[in-house]
Image 1 (cartoon, rainbow, N blue to C red):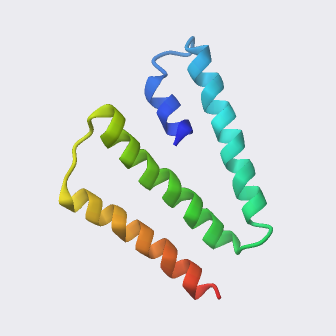
Image 2: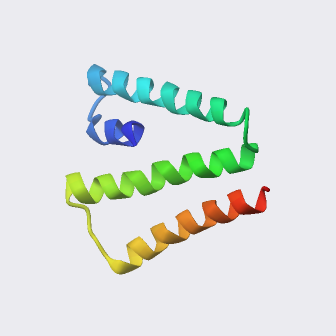
Length: 92
């Protein structure tokens, strides 16, 4: 979520602070996935990683950036969460 939030604020290549924040978040995020794949299947780890980013970014956008709220939007977010849970359950 930090990665995408920093991307939102980068307006030009001279926005060094936001670019640095983006890089720090990116390294931390990928590092977390690297740790996760040591104990869970790669596909599940990647699905969870992308779901956390997707769901978290939508929620952050709604709460902090006045992005639109709709039942349909949150139903699809629920679908993402349900799919990740399904992958985890199917993985054993």
